[in-house]
Image 1 (cartoon, rainbow, N blue to C red):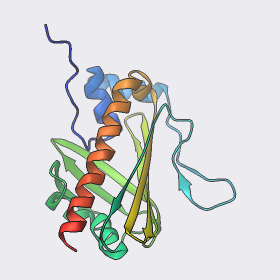
Image 2 (image 1 turned 90 degrees about the vertical axis):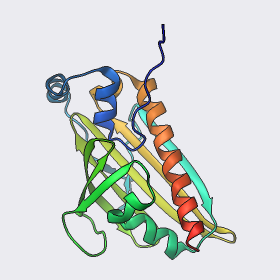
Image 3 (image 1 turned 30 degrees about the vertical axis):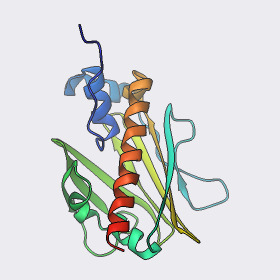
Length: 196
């Protein structure tokens, strides 16, 4: 008898990943969400930067050095509508606005049969990008920073997942988020270096 847990889609939203992991129906997830309101993203004390929820039960931090120009890496990452060309599990992305990403920009993306809506919380061109939002009882905050070095660009990412569905199966949610961010960074590196 196989007791292995099926792997979730690598780019799925926190709510959908945990719902699948726990076998919750949409009604059960909605009931859980109503009973446990989500926390909004927070800003770091003394600054205007939006940061992850440092008290969230699931947090992943990861980074990668990319041998390409800062502008190239930034342009690839912030061109959300072209994510499907280099992120294999992203089927489509639609922006609710046009032009450069800015706080309040909303993009809706389709990932292995799942629909995810993200809102941009912060943009510091060529330095910092934050998106996230509440979904079905889970708040996700995803922070990206880009630091030029002598050998390329150090891309650091961290993401927090909080909410009752996450707390119901923390190990599963942690593994899903770890795999998601590692895969995203590796695809970003491969794409940026190939285009340099």
